[in-house]
Amino acid sequence: EVQLVESGGGLVEPGGSLRLSCVASGFTFSDYSLTWVRQPPGKGLEWVASITHNSAHKFYADSVKGRFTISKDSAEKSLILQMNSLRGEDTAVYYCARARGNSWFSDSWGQGTLVTVSS
Amino acid sequence: QSALTQPPSASGSPGQSVTISCTGTSSDVGGYNYVSWYQHHPGKAPKLMIYDVNERPSGVPDRFSGSKSGNTASLTVSGLQAEDEADYYCSSYAGDNNLAVFGGGTKLTVL
Image (cartoon, rainbow over all chains, first blue to last red; front, side, top):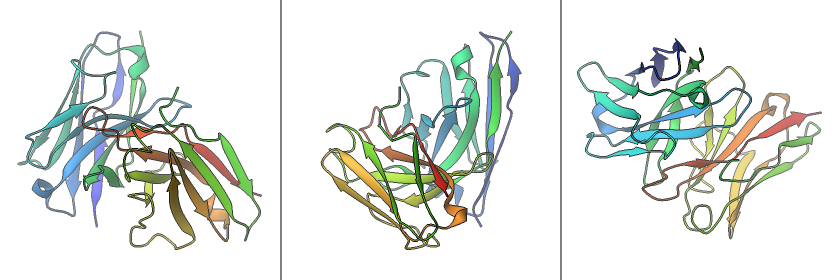
């Protein structure tokens, strides 16, 4: 069974940093691309960043480009999202998901971790 | 404002059919056959229901179907059941600079 478990969320002040992790199990980690998607309170889903299976290519939404970094830790079978220069509008539940195909749809999702940016 | 436009709400009685629309542009929905739909019960992990416009993952009931015409994609839920009540989001590939654009979500209520 595919499982994705996020952690690392919490309360951080504007301008601060946070590191999210997503531990994967139930599939061959190195074979799959992965994605972060977020949901601000009361709002819809928003794509944040994606990384190819071999980490050769990384893609970012304009809203986080230059501030967030996505990476894969194959030894730990973890997807990482390093978030710097955080803003209030980054407040959201952050989901990691396994990506598939040329269309980058997400076929399995974690339960999410809440990030709150506030002073 | 979301990139794709969905109606905020939809409803139907048990056993009925309901269709949710998702309107984009020629740069996303209309430009690729890469539309996906997700079911989201608040507090739970989103679930993939449809991918590549009309493909259904294993385990998803065939009551769920997808289609596309021009810049508008649609999700149809037939034979509505109480457990179908959830938020539904469409998403489309929009090129390497925008791998996934989402709709604002539609809250489906089973009356």
